Length: 229
Ligand SMILES: [Zn+2]
Ligand SMILES: [Zn+2]
Image 1 (cartoon, rainbow, N blue to C red):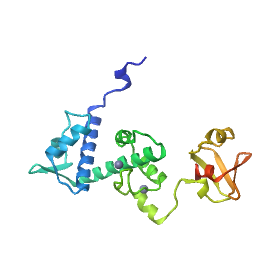
Image 2 (cartoon, helix red, strand yellow):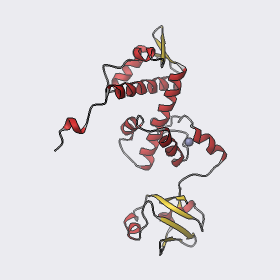
Image 3 (cartoon, helix red, strand yellow):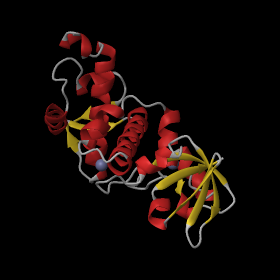
Image 4 (cartoon, protein in one colour):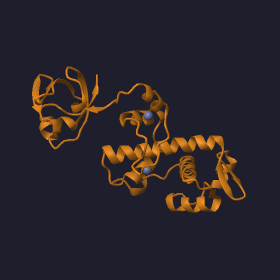
C-alpha cells in the first residue's frame, strides 16, 4: 500500500501560487461579468470559501506581481491580469461543458476547477473544437472566444458529428459511442478508434467496419460519433 501522503502529494509552492492566482482572477472576472466592482474584502472572502489555499499567496501579492491593482480597497485587473483571467475562465467553462455534456460527470464543477489549471492551449483548443465552439457553459455563462472559434466562424464544419449527420460514402474514425448497443458494436470491432465507412442511410444505416457490414437503426447511428478521415 502506498501511504496516503505519497499518493496525494501537496502541490509545490509555485503551483499553489499559480492556482491561487487563477482562482482569484476567475472570481474577479465573475464579479465584473455581473457588473459588480470587487472590494479586496469581498474577493478575499469569496476565495476563502472556494480555495483550499488559506495562507501563503494573497491578493496583495498579486498586485506586486502586476496582475491586479488595488485602489481605495477596490480590486481591478491590469491588462496582463485581464488576459489571464479571460483564459482561465475560458478553460474552466470549456471543461464544464466537456465534463457535463460528454462525460456526464455529476461533480463536473469540482472536476473543472482542477482541470482548468492543467490544460495547455493546444488541449484547450482541441476541446473547444471537439465541442463545436460552445458559446456558453452549463450555467449559461459566456465562454470567452478563442482563436479556434474565430476560424470556425468562417468554416462551419464540426470536427465530430454523429453518423446520422454524416455523408454516405465517406470514411470515418469512431471518436466515441453513446448508445446502449455499445457491447454489441464492440463485438464487431466498432469501438473508439475504429475506422468505418457509411454505405447507406435509408431505409436503415449500413456501415462497414473492416470486412464486416452491419445495419443499425437511426437511434443507434445518432449515438455513434465520428470524425472524417
Ligand atoms: Zn459554468
Ligand atoms: Zn473554439
